[in-house]
Length: 404
Image 1: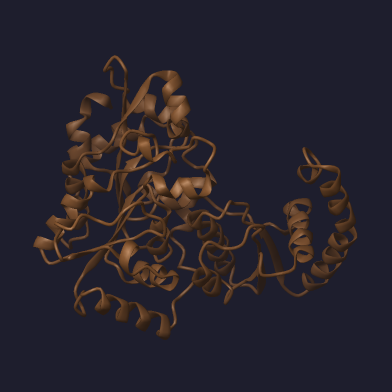
Image 2: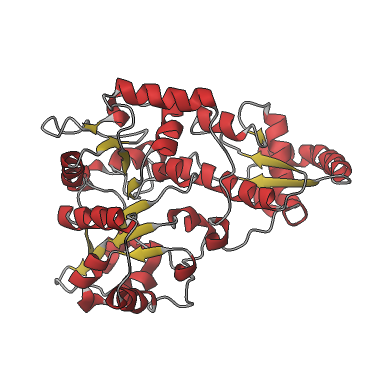
């Protein structure tokens, strides 16, 4: 509660105090509703990032649905929505308090969601348990038909397989964090801690085209169009066709998602689509709520490596121990660390490993299991990766076995 008074100017403090009577009236009203159904109030608490927005709603709705009891889910989003099609979808299953409502309503619910968090929150199980639950939403016939029409407009024939490709580049953080030095400077595009070079991902897109799989480049903010010399089966949806409803429809219809540290993978993740993840860096706490939806089912990862300015490479345990600190340019500069992006060959191996894994006759070797064990032994406390069907690329671990 003190967050609404600490570091606030006199005018803001007065506004928050004046809202307290409304907060307690809301409390009485919701307590009455609770007499015949559950009521949950969840503060999304983010700065307009689509991954955080959808992740929090999806997790809470999945768990609430699993109780098989009547409930009212209320999501409080102080800064509006980053995608109106997503808002419309989740509003079918919940009440969303955001910038479309008067500020007096939004502020009242915002204070309420903090003051009564324990009483009106929903206890969530571990991320690996949430992912076993059924998706919380479903697209309607019109939305699915919109997606199929969009595919035709992009030149993808009916019934042809396609994958989504999302890569975070410097222009994204430039729009939401223009001052904080968190990877948003386009001059650092190839060497900073969080941005990813799309050119490293185009080779696998062209290779997929050779086996008649289309690739659709996703994203709401991209710095430039894809190179013109790519295969015609590599579609620049983000630059040429992007719509808010298209994001949802393509995520639901794709075969799998190639994720280069972008939140757009969530459009496929909410429907439990498999994925590959490249250029990843771990949270210190692998069970952190923040990264739960980055840990998608049936997924394979490769991680970004790091070296010192003296060319001494960090081993995997050192990378895991540093966690999200490796996501800050200033911290890397202070420690004299340089990111080593995943190579096009590593990304290609990763994608074809997932395709093989999705095959009916795929089996795991003892050597594969030992590599996974040795890698995940670097985590303390242990993580339930075997319960969740996620893994680090076998070829990646073979190549960098000296870092385990």
